[in-house]
Length: 571
Image (spheres, rainbow, N blue to C red):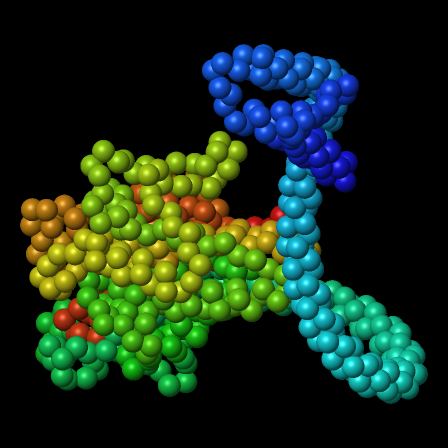
């Protein structure tokens, strides 16, 4: 408003100046206008001779000019005054104009700021409008949701009332169940006490079973001898083996007969009879399962912590390898004593897990060839490896073989794989008595370590299963060269085995274990703390009569031995 007023005052002053400059000169005070006559005369040119008239005209003009000059002087003074006033007003107005210009700039700046604020306010208004619309939409949605929630709330309220009623019923049921649980807990505690008592009874009965089992084995003898006659092979004569007789009234007797010419010159011939008695006799038609059934209790003793040694003795081709391992193509019916013993060990070990027993099994398989040890679980043994039999410590009689591969096994299948590998690597050769003759002693050993954490009882034993090399007389085997050396080494080690057993029977102070690698390795399986079973295998062929008699005589000597009472290795 102040700016507008200043502009209007400036415009009024400028208009006044323009009016003053364009107005006719004012009449000077004290002067009078020329008389009309003079004016008229002035308008008319006087004659040249009328000097007086001209002078009068000049005087009139001078007078007229003086009046104008006076009038103009007064007007000039007034205008000067007016100019000064206007100048002052102009300066004032200029100052006001500057102030107003500054105010105008400030106002314009404020106006721009306000315009920006207005634009921002418009944007904010638009945003708020959109927000309001969105909120209104959300509000409508929320209203719908609230209505749904109200409906749901009503439904849930009704359900809550139903649940409260149900809860009251369940609380009653819970009280009843808690009472039942307390009764069941008391009954469970009572059953736990009874189970503990039963476990103690089971452990006591198991201990008694082991004691009675061991007593039965002791009554049978810690060294027992079984005789097995193999069947007639298709390549042999089909005539029945009449020289071998199994008395029907005595299952533990076997009789060998042979007709010999008289040595006193008479024509009559006489029958020579050789009568033998063993712990068990197996005729040719006896199955592998029936044979194993007789030794299964002895195998069981190995799990009970007793050292057990089972070996097959006999001439070449008498069926030792078949008895211990089985044929080349194994089946369930033809499996030998070694795979059957392993299966029984693992089966019974699984059953004992429920009674707190845990077992660790470690297998090894070696052969003794010409008094040299060879690992059968290594396909290509390194020549630099030497296998020596050494004691575990100076205070222990337990022995081990240096550089021998000891394999920890946990299943029957793993052991069967090891047996197959060993069968492939075993030394065999051809002799006059058998096309494929085992030329070495094979020794399979399974170390059994048991622990019962519930009773803090530990057991340790070794199950040794040995297939001895074929025993044969030099004149019968017709061996020469390397075969002759092999036969001599085999017969020497078998003789040492007989000497060791005899020394144990006689309770000699010195037992010649070290005379043979075989007996040195098996010293802990042959002594008084162990249980020993010997298979004596004989051929049904009559041409092997002499060899069969020699084998049975050796077995009879072994059968007469008593090596003492076996003791379980328990801690």
